[in-house]
Amino acid sequence: MSEFRITHEIHEVHPDIREKLTATTIEAINESSARSAKDAALVLRNKLGEIGVHMSEEACLAAVERIRSGKSLRFEIERADSDETDA
Image 1: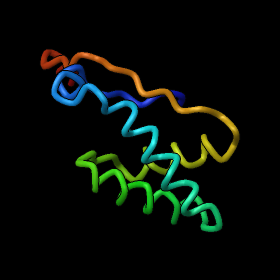
Image 2 (image 1 turned 90 degrees about the horizontal axis):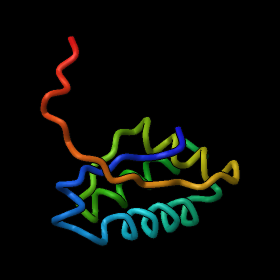
Image 3 (image 1 turned 180 degrees about the horizontal axis):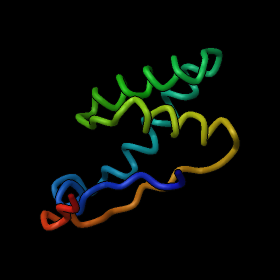
Image 4 (image 1 turned 90 degrees about the vertical axis):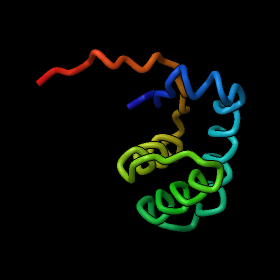
């Protein structure tokens, strides 16, 4: 997983959300550097919750593992499509 998606609607209300997400993610990972990836993901999830962002445990774990392996995160802005009802 190389990118995390932010809906366009959220970005319109909070134009600095990408920067907040990046800063909060880095802060959480630095703060939990001595912990396991799973524990660091929980710290990240809690920190994101503090800024009003809710991300799944799996996505937080993927972010932690990606950063710890030296890769970067990219937060992409996308439109929320209500017609995506593939059954």
